[in-house]
Length: 229
Image (cartoon, rainbow, N blue to C red; front, top):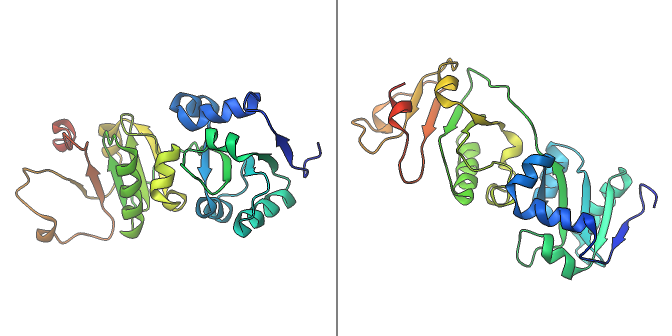
């Protein structure tokens, strides 16, 4: 099989198919391999535009969707490994019910460089992937440039989170698995934490151009330790 010829897989027992199922369903597999899955035309376009080429372009054999065909053609011309599978096997891999028939296998960015003086959102123990994706979309709309996640926060690069934020992450500096008290001590911007017991509201403050916000767990909020840091 040449680099530009699609590889056709017809068996759900194929080792690659089994591996992709693991990547779709298990965070441990994604962490171990440093790979994740993007499903759909929008995410694929965003990735090609802002990041680059995927490791693998997976497409349902015989797809008639013109956007899927165009993206697949671009990947093929760039030397990306193209794999065609039937819809039955695709449904075992795709994290989306009745997906459009296009999946990218991509490397998870490994960034640990924190910018100390930009608009930053700090997330402490956010558990729900849908919530995390919504926060990311809102952060981009609000001018946030960097998101720092605690070690207890849901993975920013899981397929569920990627779907929820629809590519907003490709515009952000994302740093995961951080010791937040240590991080807060290194930032050179005013820091604000959310709290149900706060005396002040955001409407009482005159915010400078660059700040950092701390959002806490859905049930418990920002920990006392971090509020008092």
